[in-house]
Length: 153
Image (tube, rainbow, N blue to C red):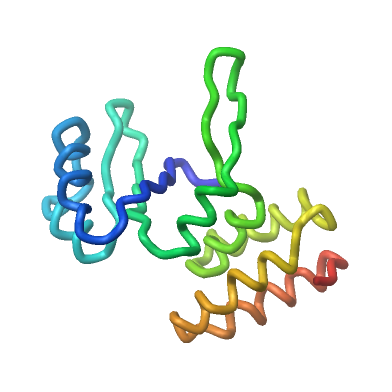
């Protein structure tokens, strides 16, 4: 329910600068230090010509690669198709980030997708990420939300 566009670009390791520089030639950075911020944090913060904020994640880890492999086409209109991640991967990204608005989005995903979600995939992918972040409380919060929605992994 945010008013930005979140994109993922598989750059791998060591080639990020050429992608960042290419984007910065066509889009305005949302920070004066957008290039340096992107190199340090692996997220390029831009603004589209229509002022929509663009968050471009510079992907390199195996989970991000698998997310891209699982992505599918979504028809916005008969002429426009967009590649989007699945509900499971979106939920994993949101739980990992664990910010206030993310939890509202997670609730909506659980309400809309419910039993159709592949909870085995979610937890298999999520646990190692949360271990790296040292944030086991995010898994606990997800489980509480699932329980509230009557969902079991």
